[in-house]
Length: 377
Image (cartoon, rainbow, N blue to C red; front, top):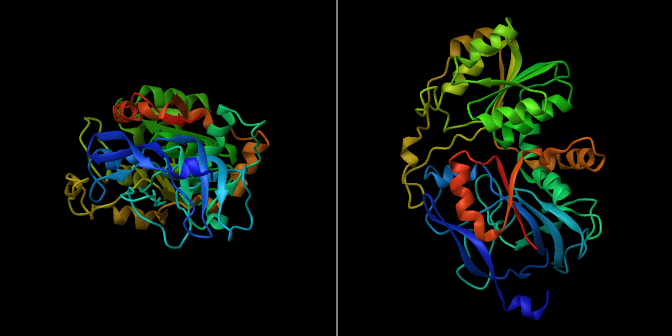
């Protein structure tokens, strides 16, 4: 990296409290350890999981660097990086690599990036990536072959496409299965898309936002609006014996038909809907914590919810949940995209400049957007 970059600053997104997102100046990241790489980010994104923090349900103390999905090309590497080279295009996955990772917004001469779960710092034009050989995912792009559309496709591998794909796997999916996906945000839509790509016989997409349901229909899923009537009964009208698999892509901010938050409603609906011997993949986030500066509403989320255990047990339903690790499926998904089989960037609703990020967090929170990408020059 040039001396001018080392001595300069960059504009990046930071959260200082619920509904409070700003674009501020931060020091340009630089190589600190021999295993680091600095990536020039060309495309980043806002994620639905960021909204749990935006709404004040999760987080520590402010300020907090935002973003955990990005791709770009390598600007510089440490002397200990052996499998990557300057100029190579890479995805930065949301989980990072194991090791010593600096946390939070920089207060000194660097911006350390915590990857994984809800953490981040990738809504910025540059990022330092520790343990780069393990953390970065190469993609078959060059400066001559890249474009906005293909970068949006590849960026989804950093989180939302991988998470949707893994959610389907967690359900025990096999080709020919019927699948109901609760939630049609980017992860839910890409779970539905993953099931379709993998040979589902029919996929149902449950939500209440018209834009999302229209997008679900456009990929071949059956849209189910839970505001119209009980979504379980709507799907049972098509599948009297229930669906074989269900996916929870909603999580702890699930709401009822009257708009009130009820943490366990999707869990209960999935158990009611899934056929005997079927399976559930739970990928929506459930996280309870004490109130903090960034999360004054955290204690509204309870660590325990009621669950229909008798029905679950009697049906012999498989249930698997947890945070997805994109690197476990990245190779397969990058291959599908490079061959033109998968085009997960269909979830895009806007491509914006970094200065527009605060406005688009508000729009995303108000369900006026689906997936917002940030384009850097």
